[in-house]
Image (tube, rainbow, N blue to C red; front, side, top):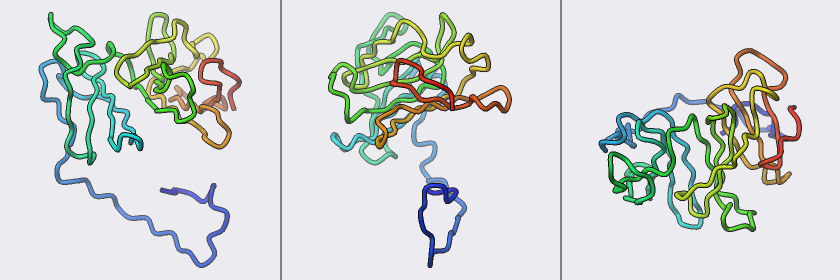
Length: 196
């Protein structure tokens, strides 16, 4: 989807037509129907081409949960046995409660323990952290945040992260308290380079 023509080289003989999106009649497709969920606040969804599967990491009252879908409409919530909730592990929880996680599967990662990457607002100490996983369910968080209020005083929730495949960099976008020229940055996933 192209909202503007920034990455389009030539539009000769083309007309841009924007249409009103229509919600699918099955919405919401990912429902809070497990005792640990309470409600679903935020989700990060990818399509895994290798497994031909949609994968979602979504925030619930009990923590970050994981689901899969073949079509993006009908979701499975596998019992993973990873995180405890009220004395048991028969659930699909993969991490504690964190804020606004964004997840990618990195096709170029050579370390199998870092195939999946997550960027989220966490504490303590307060900041944007990265976490790694071999399979998207068993996560290991980096001890220190990659962004903190010390190097980004307006750090806030609702981050997003993507892999720039052409430049082989990771791009992070974070919500700001006010308009600021430091709203975007790129880094080698752990080491912050500079704001652009």
